[in-house]
Amino acid sequence: MPDNCYPDFFEHFKISKTLYFIELVSSEIIIEKLLEQRDWYLNTLKHLDFELVMDPTKKEIENNKKLQTSTIDQLKKIEQEIAFLLSKKS
Image (cartoon, rainbow, N blue to C red; front, side):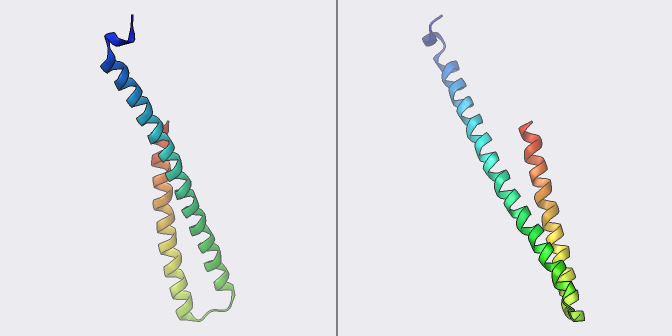
C-alpha cells in the first residue's frame, strides 16, 4: 500500500515521534539542571554545617538553622520534581 493513501496518518506519526523526542530531550535537560541545583543545595548545607564548628554566636546559630531549614525544604522540592519527571519517563 503506498504511503500517499494515508498521508495524514503518516504525517501525524512523524510529528508525534518528533514531539516525543523533543519532550524526552528537554526532560533530560531539566533533570540535569535539577540535579545541579540539588548538588548546590547539598554543598550549601555542608558549608552551613562547617560554620557551626567555627564557634558562632547565638544569633549566627539561629540564622544558620533557618538557612538549613529553608535549604532542606528546597532540596525536598527538587527531589520531588526529579522523582516526578523520572516517573513520567518510565
